[in-house]
Length: 137
Image (cartoon, rainbow, N blue to C red; front, side, top):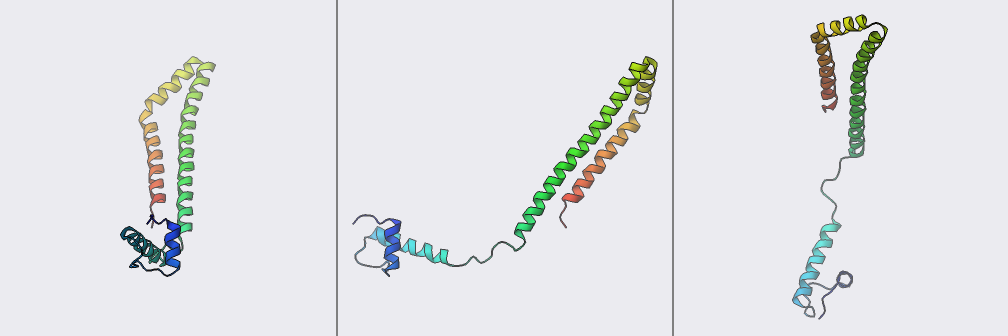
């Protein structure tokens, strides 16, 4: 007997043929039994499905990721504007008066630790803020 395909197996099951029929070969009996077991399992409802708030949770997490990304871009932009502002101030003072530019550069170098501390504090604040936003309560 030729091997049965899925459509023929489904037709045999719909007609009420049981897997222990004498007219089927041993392979066909095994296929019919496996097919019958598969449809029995598929016809039962899942024991536990997705929670009712699954879609809202996914949407909220995606929104949080988008917010973190835009916040990070804003923070990097703020740091870049600060650095460009210092460079622009030095450049303009140097164009107007080389002595003024040198005085500004000496002041920046003299207070470099204060500037670096402020920048590190700003970045630290942003990092802590992002960690608190990321935490799920």
